[in-house]
Length: 471
Image (cartoon, rainbow, N blue to C red):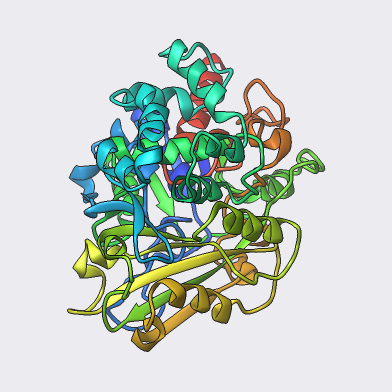
């Protein structure tokens, strides 16, 4: 082992592991330190309820993972990662027992919105179809990091993406299309009237048509394990169960790369109030279920989907998000649910199922939303409660304890609001660099933001190796 490492990475989430891989592939000596006993961060799989039920404590479905330029440049399939596509990427059920859906077919998806909006939906996504690989390179980066590969579509997407989702919804006449758009935009964990929420909705819709919304066989841990395996194959080292409190606890290195919150980075690296203006957002109340059978959705389409959004109207979805952001208790939550065992039976004992659902709640909220979540589920899947064998609940305090990057339970590691929507963690030409020349940030608090795609780690690694080469 060299006397001095080239890079030490703190945090073995997807971004930390991606940064480590990118550096190791270029011949740098890299060591990763992870506080938990296993790698993974927001991409883990554990038996949270009963033996044989394999749950994803955080992320479960990965439209930006299968479409990630960083992941696709690595031989992750050779290291055990296999993507499984559900028959339908997304179902958005309505009280009448029907549902809007997203599938690989734009035409099929558009028709579920009703004749009055099918054409408008096709026209909305058409400019971006068939160009995912180029668009993903342009979308998933710092906007001012060089020229885009497809300047015309990058500019066009920017014009479509920057307005609030409420404006995008005005292209449609019916409640079905507007509900679908609001549900997609809600992944921003911000009111749908917020800046750039259109971009979130469009990105997830385009991803569904271009790449699908898959789950990894065996659970999200498979992504992290594949990255870790590939890192070791490149000569990198990983040390788990090692919490880092101060920079001087780490071995000597030319660069230190943090897959942590900006708050933790400032504390560990002694950067004082460098990120005191950084804002964290609302949180979630998440329930992982062990079920005796499949969720009894009234809408048949929902039974075939990997992801199901529960919130029938755009107004109801926006009200739920607004309540969370404004600090009010949840009453009728918008739910994002995932049912991985629909496509991967290995996740549960034969005939049984794993299922998760989360609704939005204020940051740091200490209440119990189990009843309001399950009342909302029962609206669209009557008899759901009768199937529950066990449940594991996690509100903001538990989410924050489970993953130190989720400050106050914010699973996006930063509020999607105001200028921070497009400038995170603060205005800088290289947002991965810090005031300390050897210290870098690579978590989802940096561009392009949250999601299991490794692109924050990819871009941070680029900033690191430029610095190391210049030294």
